[in-house]
Length: 541
Image (cartoon, rainbow, N blue to C red; front, side):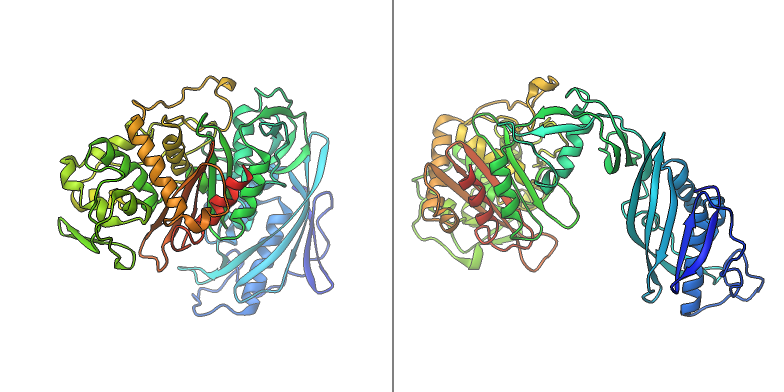
């Protein structure tokens, strides 16, 4: 790439062929209008919209200098951030070892110019074709008025960011063959949601799995603890086998279930062991929200609140509980969905129908604003630095007061959870003991797992499970859970976040020795979207 370039017009489309060829005897771009920053001789500062000719010439001049590879500083001068652009352009050949590039611009749309890159990655006698598409945008310089490429790392490669670099070399960790609990291979192609999980498992356990490294091109992050994202494999190396706690059958069901809703996540855990059986997401950004998300979980949090109220003896499953349409607590008004009320009902009815006011009315009786955070931490293991085997967020119920504490009772305000956290809450309820979720066995690296201070008291656990069973039988979880047999229970939730028009849908449930939770952003009531996702996962298990 750094040995010269040839510039030509092929079929009316600008093409750059770089590497291994002497510089062409002609340059059809050489007689441009002199509008670039390096060539302009005019002192006039232009303003106003860019002309199509300015967009075309600037794009071609930048792409030519970039593909030529001899002078990254020159290429950078065609951008509005030359200091940063220079290093990134230089690393394209020096660190990523990309050569023999053919860059083909497409038709401009306004100031945006799409283009394709076909090149070769070469490293120590190995080579492999590389192709991708990207785009650039031409803007007018703020001070010079000249047309310049609006610099962004994605100009060079669509997956580049400000904190990553393209690198080609011997992989730091060997590849892995990840398998489920029964020995079935788990791949990102078959189970797309597992892509970020598999990357992390390889980075953390590749050497322990016994494989040998290959040669790859990857995205190297400034954060040494961030997992690598492999973009191209020149030689595969030898895979080591890594056994996970996942179940391929349940994982497949989870993948299919989340596809039915945009921005959906689900996780499933075995209550008796804490083993993660499935984790899946359907998100545009590829974020593993099931394990790393942090959002208000709505009324699924009432499982923890109910446990605290039961422990304090303030309620009983069969005892009367007031459920008015609205309640005012320290100046903050709370209401039930559609302002329903329950006259002469029990606490089980309020739980099964998800009555907000029944829970909030009892705050003063606890005489402790910190009772709920303590219950979440001491019994349900939330906020105890979970070591699942990959990156995960373990939930947060910070101490609060007044209206903020009241909002926490119904899973709003400062409570932050993901579906793995809520699945674990349900698993703890079902088993009676918090067992920290894991995705690889602890014996693989002898990491320290989180341990809760105390178990769920027997009588409290029994009442909680019975209330969840009633919720699944005739309450807000009935529709979603109707097709399931066995010992089953549920809890629905809806959470309003950032003033969005439609609430997020949350749902959690158990069936025998499997607990699952799901969320769907802007999915409506808990049973509307998240409910069917959980039911599909439980059915597969």
